[in-house]
Length: 163
Image (cartoon, rainbow, N blue to C red):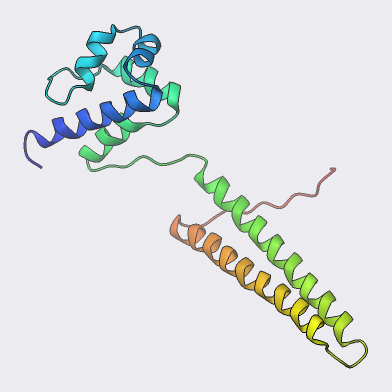
């Protein structure tokens, strides 16, 4: 990276952050820094950079670590979401549960349709609709498993409700 590239990356992140919090005036209110100073921080040709306290205040306000992420990238690092593993666990359990419900719906529709030994076009349509729902559910389940594999594994914890 050229010697000036880091500067332009940080300035771009500052502009994004100012935009995320609602513009120059809103950033000024949040950070207690004058609007003219925030304006200079927002100007790509001005050399003013945000202090850590301003970055923290603005990122805390919008909930997006825009400048912090840029700084991490410049150091060859990346930020991680501390809740990502829990979200992955919930997604895999939820998608599995939904898939099993869809499979049960297909089995119920099929059992009803085949009980008399004749499958009508309407019954075939109903079973096909349930099979299609399983395909979509299976795709979502496989995607949630891919997230677990990509993050290095999950510690799935099942609990009995009411205890």
